[in-house]
Amino acid sequence: MKPTLTRSAALIVTLLVACSSMLAHHGNVAYDEQHPTTIAGNVTEFVWSNPHCQIYLDVKNEKGDIVAWSVESQSPGILKRNGWTRDSIKPGDHITVTLVPAKSGAPVGFSGEKSGKVVFDDGHVLKMDLR
Amino acid sequence: MKMQSRRVTLTLRFAVMLAIACAISSPARGQEKAKDAAAPAPKRDISGVWLYQGSGGAESTAPEKDMPPMTPWAQARFDPERPGYGSRAVPGGNDPILQCDPAGFPRIMFFPTPFEFVQTPAKIIQFFEREHEWRPIWIDGRSLPKDPDPTWYGYAIGHWEGDYTLVVESAGFNDKTWLGATGYPHSEDMRVTERYQRVDRNTILYNIRVDDPKAYTKPIIGPERTMKLRPGVEIGELPCVWSEENSFTKRIREPAVGKPNR
Image (cartoon, rainbow over all chains, first blue to last red; front, side, top):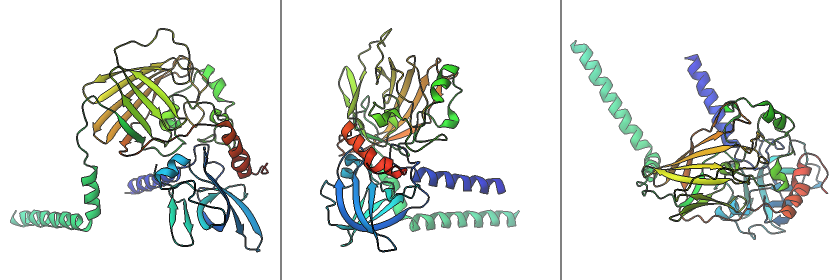
């Protein structure tokens, strides 16, 4: 019984790891995949470009200071298949982004795996999980 | 005996009821199955846009645990490599694709972006979204060149085995590319055999074998992989452009690992 349970647990862990590895093609080691988080702020720039589109936004931290965050997402090809266009995000938009943060503690994140998404104040959501 | 047969009947009844209950309570699952039951594949035709159902850019030709022992020649090339994935992953690193080097073959097969097969009588052309790259597979009966000049994507010939399996052999690679994101090398002697088995209209089972005795003491056998047809999808453009790559490195990659934003 015990070996079966251990095997099942190992399988579940393996599957979870496999799911969470749907990440950027240039190495996910910089990001803390185990601790996805959300940030909310005002967009300053949206870059529609390979290898990864980028969202830059000003986020207010707990102390009330404004921190400039940089967020990488997927390539334009993948985002296009998920319904995005180069105008999907505009400077001035207030958005909430689900991302995995940099392990270094720098205000940089990756939003592009299954849990990644951008939510606008009016409730509409941009996902990026369809390849 | 009577008691025993009653027990068997009760158990059977319970099993049938359970099966019905499961069927009723999982309509979505039933629908999903019906949708997945694809039509039969067309004969000797592999055209269309396909997507490898992989786990992301971390994949290599074979998982690290399945890589055969390296020769001293390959080990000497492998040791200084600093890949972005696998057991030796480091942030940044020296993956050649970070310099916009072509991913090369077979590495390009394992990215989570689609490719398209366009079929003509003499050749099947594989167009990759990744790098906006392409690779001809000659199916006109020619042989592999005896001493091909090395290239990033090699020289490929194919033939049909039955009506549903395309077998592709390739050679003539340079040794500048990695076999995948975990940094394993290969030599110019590498020969690759691929089998694209179209098991139904929507599905290819993909098997790959790499023979490279200069670099590995045994052939590398990749795990069986699944590719799915993506009707209606147009492959996009994902070239590596140095100015874009460089800007991305300065604005995202380096700040992510604690280097200041330049």
